[in-house]
Image (cartoon, rainbow, N blue to C red):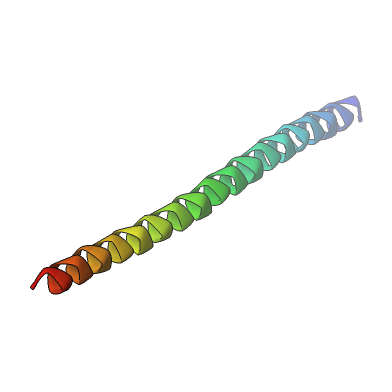
Length: 65
């Protein structure tokens, strides 16, 4: 009987540790996703700025001609 109680407490401790690991992994994935969204937003903005800059340069060339 004591052995079963000991095993159950060990299983409980393992499950508790795995729960902690899963929480840490979930937070890590959330942080990575958040950073990825920020990166995509920054790249999108950079592309729009590049496109606007190119248009401005093209307009200047047309005005010179």
